[in-house]
Image (cartoon, rainbow, N blue to C red; front, side, top):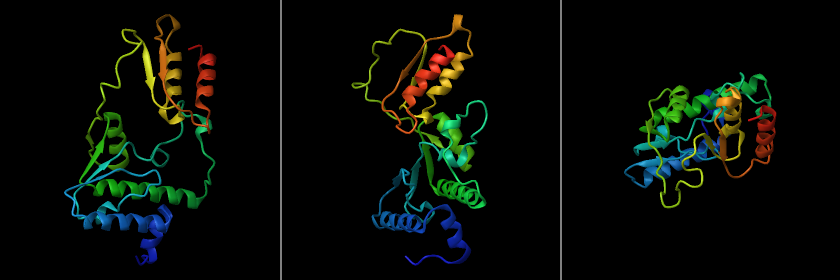
Length: 212
C-alpha cells in the first residue's frame, strides 16, 4: 500500500506507527474480499483492527471499554499515584494522545453498531466516542458458575482480576467511609496478580491501614 502523503500521513503517524495503519487497511480489504454478511470486530491489545470506515461489509464493533489511558482524567481522590506511568509530557506526547483519541473515536463512529457488555461501559463509550452503544450482556455458563459458600450472606463482593484497573482498591476506600458499626463485609473474588503493581500485597496493606 502506497503511504499517504502530506498532512493526512502526519495525522495518522502521530496516532500510530505507519505499519499499524497499513495493517489495519489490509485487514479491511481481506474482510471485504470474504463477502461476509457482517463483520464482528473486537479491538486487539495492540490496537490493530480494521479501518472500519473503509469497509463495505456491515460492521458491529465490540468495545469492552474505550482505551482508558486516552480518555480518563487521572486526578481526584480516587486516583492512585502509583498508576501513573512514566511518560513524556511534552508537546509531541499530548499531540499523539489527542490523535489517538480522535482515531479511536472515528473508528467507533464509523461502525454500524457499537456493542458493549454493561450499562457502565455504554456510558464510557458514549462519553468517549459520541455514539449510542447497544448493551449486549455476556452469557454465563450456569453449569460452571454456581452460588458457592458465600450464598445467603450479605455484604459487598468485588469481582475481577488482581489489577489496579479493576478498582478493588476503590471499594476498600468506599467501605472505609461507612461507620464500622454498620459497615458490610467485603469479599474480593479475583485471580492472577499484575507483577508490575503487586496488587494483592497492595490491597492487603490498604485493608489493614483502613481497618476494613
